[in-house]
Each structure stands twice: as structure tokens, then as C-alpha cells.
Length: 345
Image 1 (cartoon, rainbow, N blue to C red):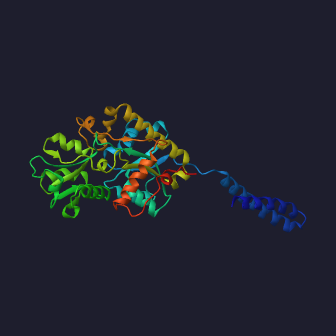
Image 2 (image 1 turned 180 degrees about the horizontal axis):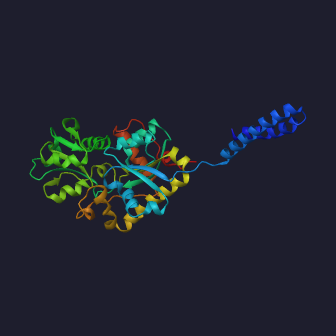
Image 3 (image 1 turned 180 degrees about the vertical axis):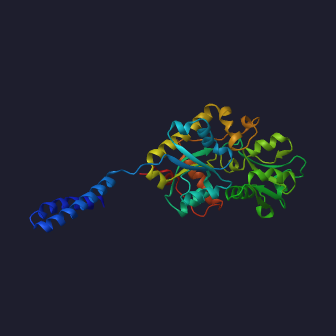
């Protein structure tokens, strides 16, 4: 389009020269027309010469869970500001809702989202996003466990048959729980699963509205600190694969293509926050008090999960987890870890 206007601009100049060979009346009419054409062409050329400006605002989303810590630390310790990135952070109770927001163009980066729905997203919208980091969960610091009340008659996994189990909304926790129970010989169909947002989970367990709770950090630490609950399992995710890349960080490729420098700075900021967490986990965990409603006396006790930084992902581990999800029927179509992590060109 800009080339067309340049041609028109050149043509008007030629016409300007030709106009003076006509009679005086036509000459004045031509001059007036040519003048308007020159002004219009000049304005259009000036507009075309301006390169589109990148935004410095990135819309991010997270759940009030331990995996959101890099986002919280980057906010609280001024790391985003240091990297010249403005963040519009939103909180969701469901991973599926976060992904739907990304697909709808309402979110640009998800710093912490389960890999299970991400694989499904890749099959529906291939190449729509890029994964740039993943978690490295280990059983020594369990992110997730099944809890019951201290005086509950439930002692083992088999005792869950016929009971009601609360868990976080979305498909990931439900699918992982069913796969875990099947692995240990428990019929998941015999259990009633109740999806509850984290603030409603402990009250439901305490009031006997449910018999057990599949708890995530930081609620796990909060519950155990009260002395009224006890675990009947270790980490379900790490039981499926150890270490477990359950949670990934991803960016919308459309946003990255339009804003490559901003995207780079935002990811650098999250990586810097990850290094800050590793260097001083006690200081970093203090952010959980503000962003995840963890009592200040418990933040240092929460099991912080390790996370890779860009360029250090274990693609073989990611692919192994993806293949496992396909094997147990939790996703219907496989995906390539390599393609999901390829840099946008």
C-alpha cells in the first residue's frame, strides 16, 4: 500500500509539470488538484514510514498457588519495572479459564499453567503458543497430597471408595487423581469428586461436606499446620512421573510476533525472579502472604517448587510426561515438546 502511494506521489509531480502546458483556466484547476494530491500523498507517506510501536504492557494470569511465585516475586521485588515491563496481572481459580482467556486474546503470558490442558490446546490450536519454562516437582517437597481429618476412619487409598473427595476446579487435578487411583488399584468410578475453589476446600472438609481433600500448596501447608488434618498420600503428580514437569509457562505467539522485545524482557524478568527464589527462598516466599493469602508465619514453610528458565528446559522429560498423559487416556492426541517450545521466527 505504501509503495502505491509513493507511485501516486511521483505521478502527481509529473502531472504538475504537464499542467503548465494547458491554457490558464485548466492550469489553475490542475494546480489546485495537484496541491491536494501532494498534501494527501505526503501525509500518507509519513504515516507509512512510522513503524508500529511495541506495547510495554503484558497481560498475565495465574492461580493463587505456589507456581505463581515467580510472577509474585517479579512484581514485589521490582523485577518487572527493572526490565521495563508493565504487567496487568489477573487471578483465576481454574487453569481451563486461564487458557480460554489466552485463546480469546485476553491474556498474553501464562507463567504457570498445567501441561495437561496445554497439550489439548496444542491439538486444537497448533502453534498458537510457545512454552518457555516448566516445573521440576519432586516428592521430597510435595506440592500435592490427599488430606483427611485427623479423626477420619480413612486410612488408606482403598478407603476412599464410596467417599466424596474435594479438588480444585479444572480437568488436571481430576485426571491426575483418576490415573493415580487406577495405578494403585482403586476404582475412581466409586468416588464422588467435588470441584471447589481453594478458599472453600478446608471449610468443606472440616464440616464433613466432603470426606477427603486433594490439596495443593500453599493450602497443603496451611492445613497441616493446623494439626486437624493428616495426609494419606504423597505427591500424586510425582507418583506418576519424578521429577514432574506438571506446570509450564507459555506465551501467545501472536503477541510475541507483534512484541518481540517486550516478550523477551518479560520472560527475562520471570527468569530473574526464578533465580531470586532459588537464591533466597525465605525472602521470596514472603510474597505468598499478599498474593495467595498465606499467613506470614507459614510462608517460609511452604514447599516451593523448582522451575527451569528459558533455554534450560528438559524436552525429553516434557515429552515423557506428554506420552504418559496419552497412555493413561488423559489426552486424546499427543503433542511434540520440541515444537511447543520452538522459538518464534
